[in-house]
Amino acid sequence: MDMVLLQIRSNGQINLPASVRRQANLEAGDTIEVTVEQDGSIRLTPKLIIDRSQAYFWSRQWQEGEQEAQADIENGRLHRFDNIENALQFLDAGKT
Image (cartoon, rainbow, N blue to C red; front, side):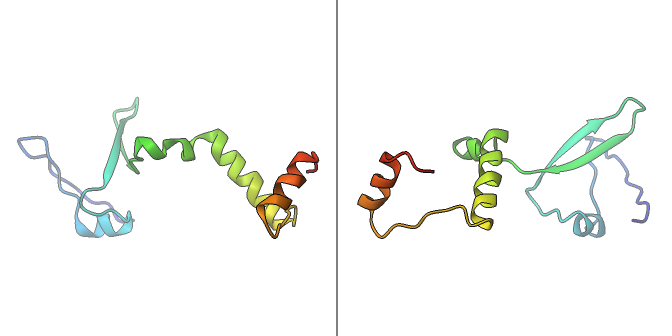
């Protein structure tokens, strides 16, 4: 990426040029995390804001379970049932 110089306005605002927004896949309303490094440099990192009611899905534990389930599916470690009664009998029998 080419270097882009920005000017800080009197109210502390900067404008990201369209070319920068396109390269970073940023759109109006997106959230950016600002980190000031020890050497004084500034890092801007795009972030997604997740609704609190959906946050569990993105937890480390849930995502590990999702990866495990996907691996089971890809490796054929699954069972199909014609009806709920057969599925419950399978579970009650303690089979895995």
